[in-house]
Amino acid sequence: MNAHLLTLLLTGFITPLPALWHVGTLVQRAMAEGEPIGPLPTWVYLLLWLALIEIGYAVYLMQLPDWSSLAVAAVVLAGLAAIIAVALGLTMFARPDNAILALLDLVPDSASGRRGVGPATTWCLVLVCLTSLLALWFGQDAADRRRADRALAARD
Image (tube, rainbow, N blue to C red; front, side, top):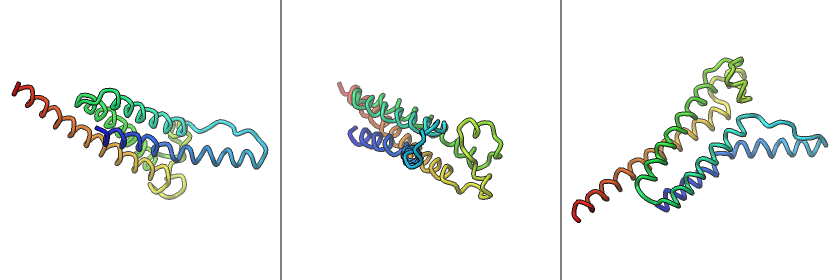
């Protein structure tokens, strides 16, 4: 269970890296120009929210270390992977005037003349792969532990 906990914590700290980098860049620019920072893009808040969910479920796994907690974390990670996959599709295939991209303050890769190769697309792909693999691992391990618990209960 410790490996699951540490992996989920590490994922929670990796997820917001582009957001933190963007905030650092804005702070540096604001300090150099002597102006206030201004509003942050919505995607920064969403990455921080995803990281908080991942860290929160790591704490949940620490408090309740059994197969059902792993199963719940696997379902949540699969849901997060699905949401990130939608964002991946939007960054790759949406038109520049897409309402959802405007809401997230994202510029689609198609607006730059390159389809599907920008930093938002790359990061979405990394996160989809990472969270999907974690969901698969957690779900498989939860099923294995459940079978072991049932076999132990059947012997008693």
